[in-house]
Image (cartoon, rainbow, N blue to C red; front, side, top):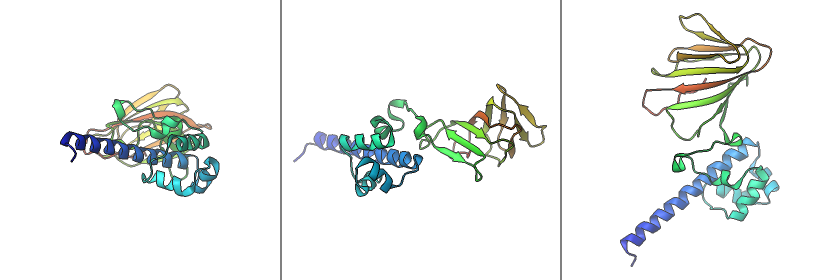
Length: 211
């Protein structure tokens, strides 16, 4: 009969193993979709069967280091990027090829999340690309939401309710309340690049959509 201490240690190890398997599955799914690959295509590239890849993605199978290496090589990423657990040790690296990308319906407004998308954040930062002359109408966020915008390249008009539009150029920044509808308009003939920071104090854990 196992001692209580032994049982606790076993359950803890089992919990860690399960958490790791789920993390690998989620990382693999995100990376595969990022590369625009189907399970069949990744199977052909990696030499790992489609069935095994499916089991790994759903957390039903824990891959060996050999399988991880073959999958990582096929995706052109490091093995650590496949096994990282968001929030571990309080430090998270969001590599460029694993970032969550959000786009408007016509693709004229693209946001790349610069934080772990699966974790609730009170401060969120995005890299934003706006197509030439594109207008993006943004609905009001919950009360207490603020946005800060820093323009890296481009001429961007920020339209706010009951206020005159603010026109920003390279190096300009603006901070405003985002609990009313607003608009971002690229005035130029080239893509505008900017950083967007969203903060909220609603405390309900919901994520305000950046657009």
